[in-house]
Image 1 (tube, rainbow, N blue to C red):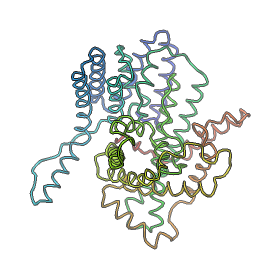
Image 2: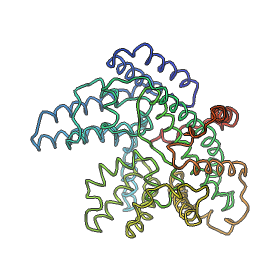
Image 3: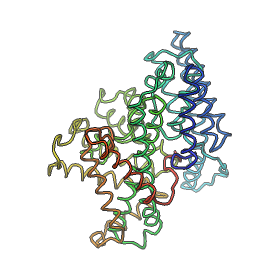
Image 4: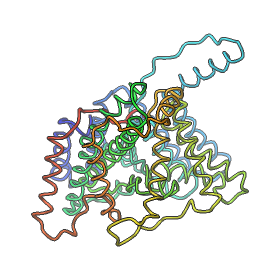
Length: 476
């Protein structure tokens, strides 16, 4: 079931009404209802993979309960390893089995040997990377004694499978989301209104921004040999906004849907293309994933509290794993490598953690320095996106080769209206950069004006939506 379909438009109001007006007397019944609704939501893709979610939930709930009963370090280590092996084993098999097998075959061919083996026709379960990381974070936090293990099996299963963020995040922490399942929830009108605004904004980002960009991106990346360097540049430019509109749009709808049900999910995007360096970009892009790798990989490896060679190692490990998390293709690993290489100078200059403030706060226009910083950062991100979008490494390098020649300075054959539209949208992001999202417009005193803005976005969704495209991050 997709967020941008009539199915969800019917599903969500039914869930909302039953949740608040029928099952609101008892929190256990509410949680059971959410669990059933979430399993139904997932089953609309493929009911056969519900067993994987159930297994991950059962294993980590059980491991948490056993961890609560033992203090012996050896037994606790064994329990943690069990959780890691089950969850990562399932993830590796479904997502990376064929990739590793094909990579081994290519290595053998380099040495003049052939490895006789056949790949498997494996269907990737939707959202497996997301819910695997979410349930693993619970076990690791319990192991570290940072949270108390829950003895409420129903709440835990509902936490793992919560339908708004089940298949594409945000990747929630048990410390934030699980307690919300264990306490009584009351209807909050203000929170629900903000949830509706986020859903509206998310649909606009997905259907108007991402889906319109996708049409140009698919054509340019498929027929890249027929276009000038300037057109190829805009192909990458459009993909940058396609993936942003697609993924942040999904996150907005997920967060908004959760707010309608009384839950607060973490912010996953915060105007990433206004970042002034890559360090700031990764504090604004896919926040739930970047903080997951920070807390469960980077810091355990020593973070920046180690020697410089080990610090460099830690940086590369995190970015390469981030790339590999996205998919079983060397293009994603190169994407992560590019970010690591451009992050290193910031690390050496000790500016990787700078720019935690609002850019040019209180000003209508960015300063010349800020403009250069944002432009340079966006250019690096844009180049890396070429590898992310390309079918393979050869495709990516040929695309870049076609981009960086004298035709880069020719007039591109792209929709000027689409370019202008994206620039106008970024102006609004700039003006709202100190807010949680673009539609946080309570500062506008006139209610009719606010309503007119909402109706304007709804009108744009109905009349300017591009051809429906699948959510990009469903493949991860």
